Amino acid sequence: MRLSWQQGPLSPGAIGRFLVPEPLPQRLLYAEPLRRRMRVRFGGTWIADSEHVLLLFEPGHYPITYFPDGDIAPNALERIEHTTRHRDFGLTSRYTVRAGDKSACRGAWRHIEPPNYASELQGRIAFAWPAMDAFYEEDERIVGHAADSYHRINIRQSSRRLVVRHRDRIIADTKRPLVLYESGFAPRRYVARPDIDQSALTPVQHQTFCPYKGLCNYYDIGDAHLAASSYPDAYAQVGRISNFVSFEPDPLSVQLDGVQLRLEPGQTVIPHGPDRDLDVEQVTVKQP
Image (tube, rainbow, N blue to C red; front, side):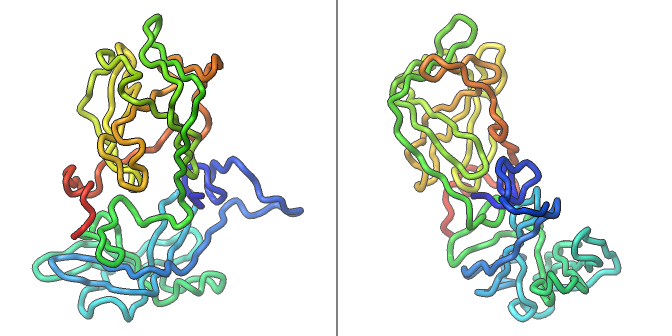
């Protein structure tokens, strides 16, 4: 599950609840060792390299990685006068990150005196993800954001009939949809191209990026804007959905075994563009 994003148990939009006798705090934060080697690339050099990274889950945010002071390159950080105050951890100092001729103002931060309940953050530095050149786990580049260790995707073959209509026109009719179950999201159904009237799909100049699935393309169907989407070259872990098409149940009529589907809570994806304006090749090929 995604702990703190979309509908994960620590997110504001959680669909489940903790079965406890007393109410829990509205904001639950969770930290644990990442247990993976992570490195940070900036200005043509490695500025951080650690096997002791701490992963912080904060409600409504992607996971954040904190590096021990001792695993950061000397002279890579220059403290600036500007400080902020974190709502849970208190006063936070900001740093300019420098390497070679490159610098990133406010590219890193440290919680100066975190409360006792967050003592794990003492002596640790977090780097602003978009400000750095790249993050790696071992020798593979991680794009988008730090991987959520509780995120999971399952794809299942189904024989249920899925019919998609735009007004009176049948756009797709299949008895072999793939169902993608992704932590924090409602199920999504994907249809093979031979079962689609592809003349109804109008490609648009719009892409989003998922760190777990890859680059996603979109289509208009008549006057229904961004009514369908597809991962033309999904990552190997979810390669079964490559070039399949998913249809939105709000602007279209999508029926499963004759039952009208509606936009479920959590089905609306909060997208973000390709990490650091990476092009298609950089996003789809993770090897350095």
